[in-house]
Image: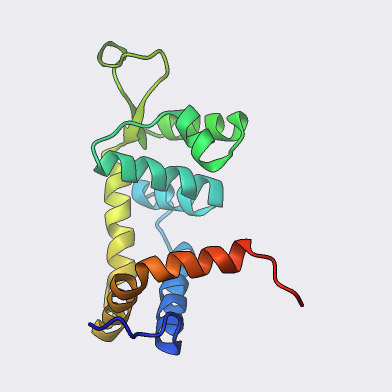
Length: 165
């Protein structure tokens, strides 16, 4: 791969739009209402806040880390009520597990994703990446490897620098 790949060429834009469509369409798939995984998937796909929290808990769990409500609120600028409500729902549904009080040093509860949530994300990932064309993956990799520093600076400038109309 050379460093001369245009940052936002048509192939890359189409590839990212196709990926976004797959991600958004997952919410529209039919899930068995009695299926516990289906209920879990619908819950986390039903709002962006739930999705943010679920993704954060999953990422931390996969990394072997525990999460706190305070850290989630700080990371995403969410209200205490929103976060507490979602965590209560998830603990009650057994989608989050709470670390044993004897194992943690702080008084704050620490959480990880339960097995059902991990299974749910495995199904989601299989759906997102199934039958994904090799050329599309190659396009992503070329752009991320060749332009990662450039992309960050260009996006930052375009988003945070006022332009004259």
